[in-house]
Image (cartoon, rainbow, N blue to C red; front, side):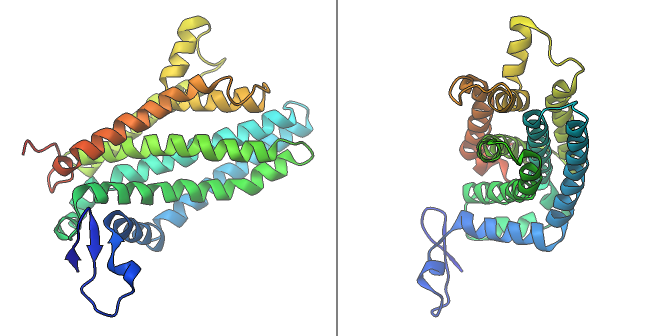
Length: 280
């Protein structure tokens, strides 16, 4: 293979299809990363674990619904929140291993020697991590359908979950890659990512919710995960219009833009055989 312009990869084989001869570099990387993720068994194992968690939550929500502890809208919202939260969690874990993990396994050098620039490598790895989020979302569809039968909320819940969850997954995948790129080892990358997960998800599990008043609302808005889940509840349970609480999505949107911007801008200095940022 020979390097083409603008991060594209051109094949040197004369019989290769024209589309494959001018394939974007990020697509080639994403293809390989997805193959490694799903064929190696890591992806299916994480999706299976996700389905077990969602099965338990659906059973509990359904039982509470029968006992009148939860209304149908609340049961659907609870299950959707778990699906989004756990789905983006595994996305963060996979992206945190994407660069630092390859360094320790000795496979990053061969990737850096490939005729693809650093930015397409970052985009391809992000796309591969997002494939895990999409897989977990597809798995959650039948659970939400079962809980939402009989009310006109399933379609809305699925569309909301896909849009908000994808935004959140992009934000956390970019953060995970950023942590992975600058970490000195894979253990450091995973440890920092797990600490970040605790910091982001713990406030959503506090008894009685966040502190009340303007300060509590500010804390919710500053936390991208809490803000996204609050938006889902406002629309699905409280019946608000989609546009009424869009300000709660500013935090995940800014996180995705800032982390992604840093990766794209400094990607050539961050994707290296050693952790940290090169001054070159």
